[in-house]
Image (tube, rainbow, N blue to C red; front, side):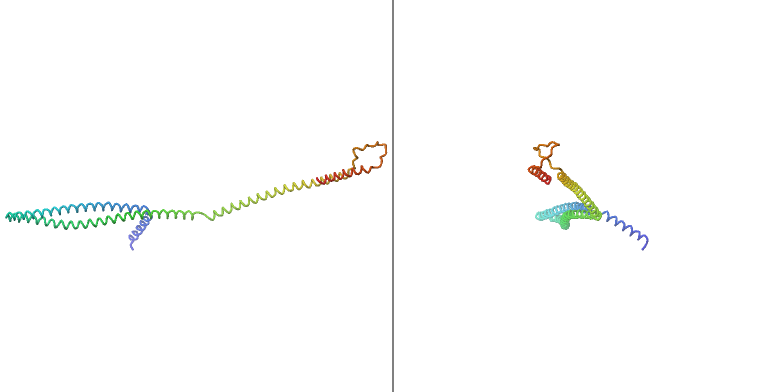
Length: 260
């Protein structure tokens, strides 16, 4: 393989690759429909011109037929009048129009066939354009869906799922640690409060017991209604009734201390 052939192949492959990358399916479909519509306009113009030519040929053919009939009548009239030379001229003129009519008829048949063919092509092209427009909308929807799927896949592939899950796990661990600290602080606060109340209760029991002990060690109180003897005089023997009163008061005091 020569050098120029290799260069030509490289250039062609690069150009083809650039063209393939530059082709937008949606734009290409739109361009194809535009080109088909341009062809439709040209075909309609061609059909209109062919029909106009057919109409002219028909008129010329009909005129030639009228001339043939006219010169036929003129030849008959000349023969009726006995002018054979004039009748011959009339027949010669008739022959000229007959030849013209024959040529026009052949051309008219050809034009009619062409017009019918152009009309069928026009109908087919219109149908293809309608079908292409429908396909274009369908393909446009498919292209839109494909682009959306591609973008979604790119987004999903670009997401660092493992890193995101790790972040969630770290945050969950921090929340658990914070909840544990809060619970520990609450338990410590409750324990401290309970210990304070326990100390209060313990001190109250000790104070109560100390008060009861002091009460037991105090001498019996003298009755208020009993007169006090002079210091020089000797005291008489204790009255049994006075002792009972003292014992009753002491028992009452003890009951009160026990209830505290």
